Structure formats: C-alpha cells, structure tokens
Length: 110
Image 1 (cartoon, helix red, strand yellow):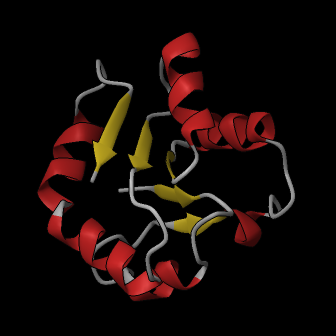
Image 2 (spheres, helix red, strand yellow):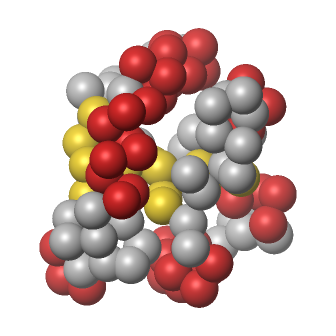
C-alpha cells in the first residue's frame, strides 16, 4: 500500500510503519514539505499514493474531485505519533480493502 503522509503527521511514521506499509512516504521525503494541498494532491495522483491526513481539506477535495488519489482522513484531535501508528496498524485490513476499491474516495479513521 502506498501511503503519503501529509505535513500534519510525523515523518517518523514512515519508519515506524515500514513493516506493514513498506511503500509509505512523508511529503517532506518527496520535496513537498511546504507544498500546497493542490501540489500534494497532484503528486499523489500522479504517483499512485493514498493521502493520509488529519486535515479536512483533503476530504473536501475528494468530494469535489473524486479519486484518484484516495484520502484517509484521521479524525483524532491532539494525539501522539504512537497513537496514529497504532490506529493505522489496527485498521490495516480496512485500509487494504479501501485501496483495492477504486469506487471509494475517502476513508475516515476515528
């Protein structure tokens, strides 16, 4: 699964989740650290990534534009990187199924 973590998520997630999500990247790794949402969206679309973000802007964009890319919206307030890691580990099968279904545009994780 190819996940692209938005700047509002820690870049440490890439290494922490490498055993389950070997193709994940953080926006700072691909030269998009300070990029606009549009630039991140286009990069994900062009490179087959699913965007993972805590930002509702990507969820709204997915309503307007559809997919690709697909969007995983993490609906948690202030929480640690470890909590995000555990959330993504817990929902591994859900995320796998989500990415396989090209008719869905976004997934909300609580």
